[in-house]
Image 1 (cartoon, rainbow, N blue to C red):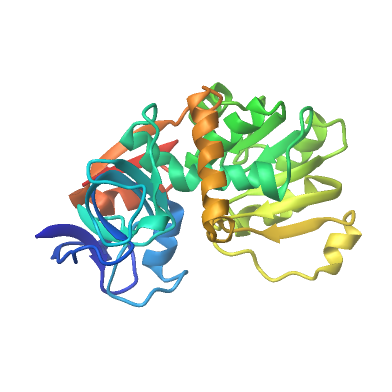
Image 2: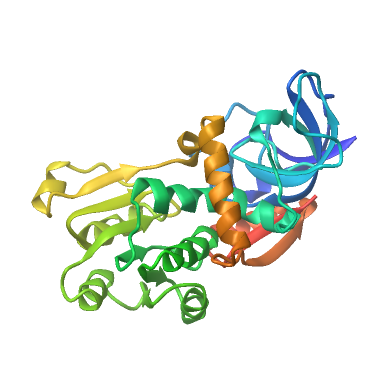
Length: 323
């Protein structure tokens, strides 16, 4: 049998159940993989709570790394024993699973399984944020909310690697020190300081050309007001809840601003886009430009505890679940 974390109803971390589940043999174009590490992400919480509705029951988890045990007919380029990883494919909270071969990428020798599980979803998210949604240029000053989180630490490092000056919003002195260690030039303690005033102070009153915001409701106004004219608010998450409806006229009145809501699913929807995102991520990690920070691991049976800590913002960097 195979153990997996499944939900039968939406709710808090208590709805996560460790259960025995059946794994089907791989069909045409599929492979059977044994997970060695699974990533934890805010999208898991959104799906568990019902913010992002799923047809239940369902095994949660959107990214993982592991070893191929068996391949189905028609699979080319992947063989048993090969190390692989994936993102944005539901069902990762499990010891084993079948998955479409074209949703997998082979892992380079220089990237360990836990590192891959911690970075595929977050790292490819950062790739599209910095290299597609707003192409960060050397010398730009950018603002990053939740700078000490899993995505935040990768984003700050990668942006710094590209030559940007990085302002990071964090919730504590401890998180500020971590963010500074991994790419932030300036930190703002959002509980104690006025974000907009500090951004204007750092930028000599100009504001920033782009704000990367995964927090949502609580930071929308400060993010908008931190932008320079023609600036872009890039929303890619809602840890504090969804952004409330607003009048688009406000964007014009505050400086002909842009607002966009992005998702990784679109950015890796084709094989070409997926390989481009993964290869750029592998390259920057292997070059040393980005270090993947794993600060907590949990056994599969303690996934509910992992959710509690992520949801309460007690975590920094990436958290990995070990099946």
